[in-house]
Image 1 (cartoon, rainbow, N blue to C red):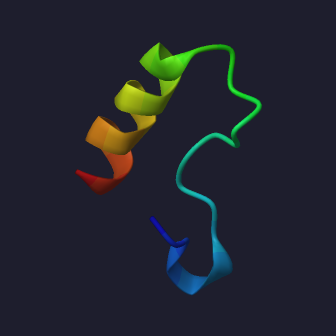
Image 2: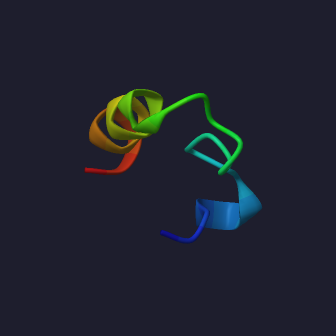
Length: 30
């Protein structure tokens, strides 16, 4: 999932857990 326009629409791999990832991915990208 590349960033659009060089912007990061999702948390880094340092995220606490996959829950935040799903939240970001579902709210920003998917």
